[in-house]
Amino acid sequence: MTHASELYLYKRSGSYIPRVAAVHDLCGYGKCSLGVAIPVLSAAGCDVCPVPTSLFSAHTRFPEFYMHDTTDMLSDYLDAWVKEGIELDAVYSGFLGAAEQVASIQRLYREHPKALRIVDPVMGDGGQMYPTYTPELCHAMSDLVDGADVLTPNLTEASILTGIDYSGQDVDDDFVGRNIDALLSMGAKSVVLKGIVRGDGLIRNYVAVPGGDVEEVSATLLPFMLHGTGDLYASGLLSAIMCGRDLRSAVEFAGGLVTDAMKVTREQPDYEVRGVSFESVLGDVTDLLR
Image (cartoon, rainbow, N blue to C red; front, side, top):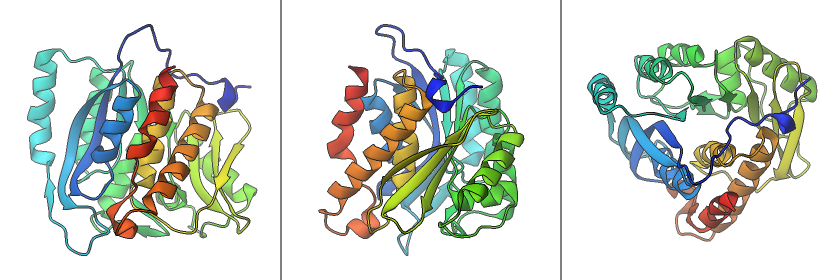
């Protein structure tokens, strides 16, 4: 029986800098998506290759934002990568702009069969889909579950993917296990289910691999929510993996990174909408290389 604490997904070799395709949106204002993934993974000594799925003037928590869907350019974009002979060590996907973009991610999988597949199925939170998402896009997102080396949904996203009714953030271990079992049965190679809150001052994340026990990793629950924390969590998790940490250790690192960044964020003006301020914790990411 394999446990998350025994699962090492990437072995760092000497001074080699691994290359990660980050398939996310890009926001001009507000800290999330590629604005988080690029600096965090770079701090972990990764060469981050962005594949922008959408361009936003600001993230979707702002009442006014402009969105440009990049679907039409992705085929030519990736064709150019093929001509350049680009090789990838990981494909890390997040927010998508259209259902058709799933095919671009699957293309990357075909063209880089040895690359890790990290799927953060960014679709919603608090029981609600994000405003730019459609049922068709959510359905297409489920195609990325099969074969994902790491799948990192919150409870809302797990509900969308599995069809299990969303029951809030305060759910028991049986409910957690039922969601994780369903996601593993869909083909995920490991699942990190995020954001369980039971009123005891902790936020719990659960990690499991097929045939292993569901392992709980908890952190201090802070009394406010921020945009971009999911992106920071997944980017911190992948950073630890690419630095050779086991999956459970990576889950623990990501949770601590988000908590520390949120404490800094609270001291910033307009922190409720600007997004998570991760800049001062990048040193913790760099320390993964030591």
